[in-house]
Image (tube, rainbow, N blue to C red; front, side, top):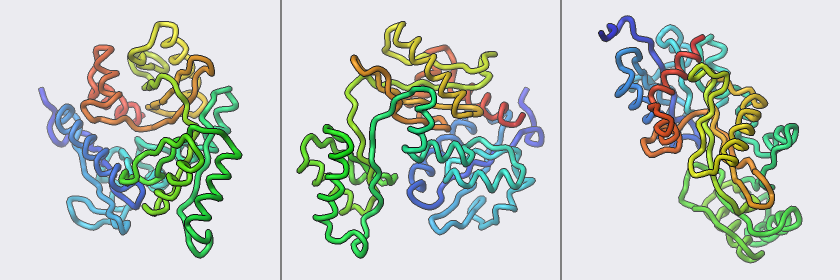
Length: 305
């Protein structure tokens, strides 16, 4: 028998906000709202909390202050800028999202790399190039050549060059030569983006999704697909170590590259699952006989404790 509306718990899904999070956050938040409304409506009600590009908060199209949210929701699922977590912590609202330390680890490749060295986890070498400013950086051509030299001196080709923004119009460049690297950096300048240049690691890509307390396990890690038994065991063990070391609370996605000769590299981490029906997370749930909304319900319930 379904619960009444009064008995339902209320989750406020925060999405939008300033760039570079706005576009991705809108879609991610929409997917979460859709999944909860479709599969968990007997227990949970969603409230769409939209932050526009000017930083104004809205509930049902009506501007509100952040403090107005207290008392209206039981829990917040934040898909916007992780720094907003401090707002909800100050309001004593339970949170699905990222605290400041986890945010710094996830957003700052350098900090994450330093943190992973403590448990001997390798990451691709990288260099972050901030948004080009003509009055500070000089001509575009000289700036691109200068930064390309910085990259060249730090690590060799091939290089992966991509935007730090959620705007994907720049695309992703693979540069094998110095001139190609210069051109890729110039493309980032033309798009007005900050850029990250990474060492391109050739290997087998995989993701491991982990949940705390799922299926009565301290840390339940979904086996990555399309790997041998031995490879899976290595990836799962490493995923659990990273989960513990980062202090993840309810969920962690770890993207790996498994190479033939250089071992395992950590490519990225994420603290919120993608609920697109064809996402790696949804497919991983299906592979062990679970549904994505079972995991979503677990995340919500455990975050209230």
